[in-house]
Length: 353
Ligand SMILES: [Zn+2]
Image (cartoon, rainbow, N blue to C red):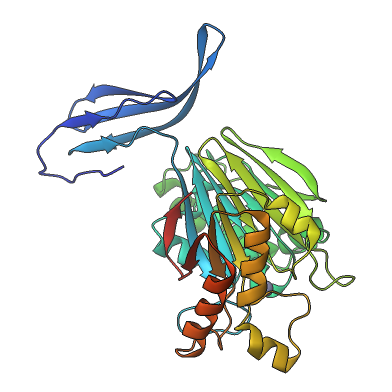
């Protein structure tokens, strides 16, 4: 969608498409309001699902399909660098936004990417290493603080410890950050900020649905469904999951942190896009004995090739691999072992499925 701005000439171009209905309605002093609905044929009838409204005062282009876009927020490891730190992604599918992992500074990077915490209704953790979850308290508090009481319930899923971690952050009695929201709920100054933002009193305590999950079918959204497979990382200390999201527009896999294994290969079979952890250039990893529980430039490429993946995105990139010279060598190794399209990730990059 390419919205215009104030002062642009008003015109509407709507691309017709079999699975989307766009209904433009004149809205005086604002421009045109669009109701955007997905349309699915059921026998001789259509079922409509409301996706979102959009209002633009300028030229509006709608590309005519349910968009599936992936934002890379965190493309690094536990080692901070000026351009990479930790792991996090957001998928936009139709009107829904799904976060995968919540590593360092995710909430801030989310806003830098043009997204907003209250828009995220789903969060899936691959595992509970800090480079994948340390911004969770920040995200929970910000999403709640910015809410006006009309948002959807945040649904969080992940392997063992997801429920416990959520409880330990937000619970009124045991939560490490309960003092913050208790003060904001009760102090008149914070109540006023809430009302000024559009909230209607009383300001309610935060509510989150958190569930520990295992591999298999996990959840279905409006236009997507997600399943998980066991990943091999640092068991028995932490459980790890890889995820696959299937939509009408295609499929995307997040390996999370794993070494090459049959369960992740099976999950990724025929996927359109796979975001694979890629710790380092493979020879450096072997020299340093760092090949266990992780993947590098060759092992990630071979896993994608064996699974018949169409596009491989190298993410979770370590500091050494991100150094010129090593990077070019590593990308060469990946290209030599994978026939599909190869993408070397950068934070705040986004791509369509
Ligand atoms: Zn990691």
